[in-house]
Amino acid sequence: MKKVSVVIPVHNGADKLRKTVNAILMQSYQNIEVVLVENFSSDNSLDICQQIARNDERVKVLQSFDKGTTYARKKGILSSGGDYITFSDQDDSYIDKYSIEKMCHAIQTDNSEICQFGFYITKGLGRKKKMYAESPHRVVSADIAVKEEMKGLFFCFTTAISTNVWNKIYKADFLKAVVQDMNRTLYIAEDQYLNMLALTHPDFRQISFFDDAYYVWNSEIGRSSLSGSAESLFVENNFTRMLAIHYTEKYQLGDEVMYKIHLDTIYYLKAIICTDIANGADKQKTLEKIRTYHDFDMVKTAIQYFQHMPKEKHWEELDFLISDCTAEEYYAFCQEQKKNVSFKTKLHILYQKLLHSRYKT
Image 1 (cartoon, helix red, strand yellow):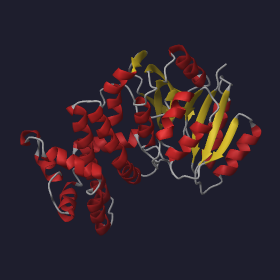
Image 2 (cartoon, helix red, strand yellow; image 1 turned 180 degrees about the horizontal axis):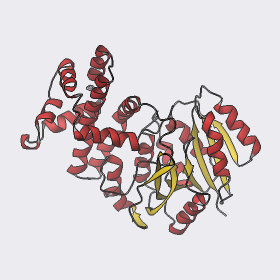
Image 3 (cartoon, helix red, strand yellow; image 1 turned 45 degrees about the vertical axis):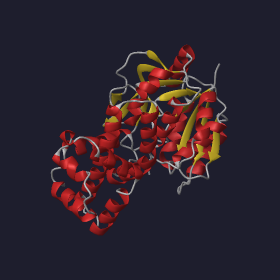
Image 4 (cartoon, one colour; image 1 turned 90 degrees about the vertical axis):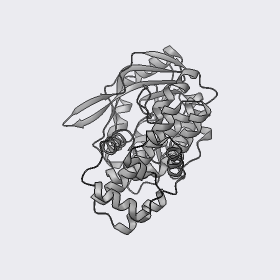
């Protein structure tokens, strides 16, 4: 029987961790290993991890002394002893006790490097919504996955792939080779980073998609504030979006993908500033944020992209957002719109809130 390792980064998770791990240990598939990687907690998370490990030899406890979920995951992956690796957050769960068994059976049957499943999002009062499970079972080769599926990692909704790692199971040897190249401190955009590296790794042959959903993201638990999580993600995306641009160019993914990446950047910045103003943030700090963010590589690249685009593809709001306006002018523009945030901005905030705010504090 093949072994499955479940890697869980731990940061201030003392109040939820025991329930999460115990549920995994009670899965029908018993040849499992739970790898807990404590990362700079200020509560007694490490003590809880060690207590759990003393009660079940299948639990391994590590500490990552490099800050960030990226490095915690990397250490957990490289220290795993399983044939397959999947992930959990410290406060999430599986839909039933057969989830890991079914995931393991799926990856063995298809012999893919990665298998992706749907997942559920909790909606309050015990309600769950099924996500990313619209496609029937299919196996996609590496070439097609890079040309088509990888677009889903770059904010395009025309593919079945999701950025998340916890609704996937990976071949352990493959994933260990992938994470050798992970060298960035990320807290929120780390799922996207890992999956970009996985889909472009030379050992990647194929990915399988299933319409079954096994993982439950408890989105109502421990969520950081919208403005805080959105702002942190924006900062981290200064790296991941430039990497996405690199892959878009390298694999010739098309103008549609490049357009979406850059438009997302422009409107995400606007959303953050509008949210700051609506929340009554200090004006001088917000002005400094505008100046700082406009100096990010991804923002400068997005502005240049649209400035070189034919004018007939522009609209009034976009023309202003890519103009050489001062921080004060940008602030005034967003202040005028704070009570009437555009549909695109609202949609973007919702998207980030549901699918990207993964680092819970």
